[in-house]
Image (cartoon, rainbow, N blue to C red):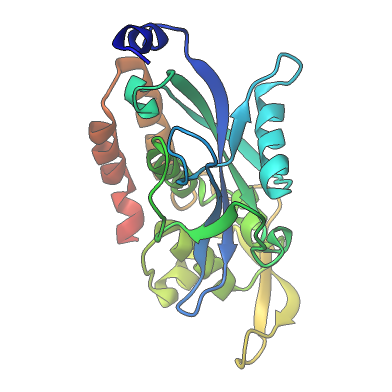
Length: 268
C-alpha cells in the first residue's frame, strides 16, 4: 500500500468499539490477587499479542449490551457489576492503521462465576501485577480500571460482588489488599472496619484453612457513616477524572494527581 493510501486511511472516520476490563479475586499462596482475562489477537494490528475482550458496535445494541456481548462471546461471563470507564481515542493507539476509538467498561465477577479461572482457546487469565505485552493501549485502560476500583472499594456492592454477601474479616482484608496492590496491616484494618459501624456479625462462623472458625460479617442495611473510609478519596478521584476530561489534562499528569489522591488509602 502506498503512502497516499495510508494517509487517506488515517483521514477516515475512526472505527468505534467497546473494550472490557473484567476483574475477579482469586486466591494465591501469598494472599488474594486480582486477575483478568485476556484474548490473543488473531489478526493485525498486534497479531499474537494479548488484548482486552471487546468488539464492534451495532445499531440494534446499546453500549452496555455491546459490552455484555463482548464478555459473553469471549469469556462466557455474566457480571453483575458493569460500569462505563472512559473513552480512549489517541490516534497513535492503532500503530498507523485505521484510527480506532474504544469505549471502555470495567466489570466485576465473583469467584464462583469464574469457574476456577477456566480458560478457552485464545483466552487466558492473568494476575494484574504480571501482565504480558498487550495490544493497543490496553495496559493504560487496565490501569484506569484499577484506579476506578480503588476509588470504589468502600462501596458494599463492589466488595460483595468480589467476595460474596457474607465474609470474614480476613476475607474482607484480602479484598482491600488485592485492590490496593499493597500490604495493609491486619490489626489496624480490623479495628477500622469494626469502628465504622458498616458491618455486623451474622452469628455464623466460618472455618478458613486450619484456623479456628472465624466470625462471619455482612454490610449493615443503609450507611450509618456518611463519610465512610475512602469515600473522600473516591470523591476526589471522581472530581479529578471529570475535570481532566474537560480540561484535556495529559495522562501522566492525571496519573500523578490520582496517586496523590490515593495517598490517604496507602497511609491508612
